[in-house]
Image (cartoon, rainbow, N blue to C red):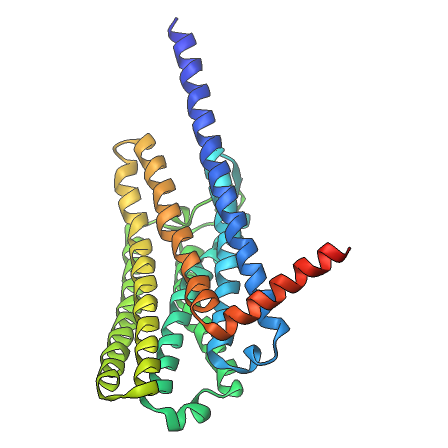
Length: 308
């Protein structure tokens, strides 16, 4: 009887995990399709890839798409307890560690662009040219790679060659062989996001002052820019909470594994997937120019399909 109950319990748990994976796959496919549509719209119009805010928007879309794809692989591996060699896990986690930071750093750059456009309009063309945008993208990826480089450097210094041939459930946590590595990782992320939060707050205050002093069309444009900065700030807040979730999950893991699985699933939905729908909302729907282009290409695609 006990064996039967155990078998039923295992089957129920397995079905529960399968249902979780199915829900994640549906959400990931929806977000990836939306991102793909927006990316295609971006490249179809020359105006977009010669304007800094749309270029940075495309960077966030590509970053979110890479992150969704790679974290989705990790979700599948975790839920079905599939083990891979550590060296392969390192490759997957390098992409995750890089692009988990690229999006918030890009959001900060977009906030600075709004600050320059509203508070320094005469210098906007000089500071936000296409050439400087390419430099900005390189700087974004350079800054975003700092946590990744530090984590991998500490891993290479601490682990033996045999460690990379072991089979483990892939997670960034397996790179944390010592407690000081976790503290160092936490410190780097907290410093990065503290600096980004200070920049966003500074831009918000400066734009608020200009908004109060502006009038007519300038006032309307300035308040729209202010709302964009607020949305960027909310996205950064979700990204900041996302950094704290591994430490909460690690504490729960020692007490109850089932609660740990549910908590990790909840955190993935709320703090990984949910923020990814905000970028399409901010620039894909709120921006009139991009929204009209999106409607044009979407309707044109449907028209061609009906003809065929």
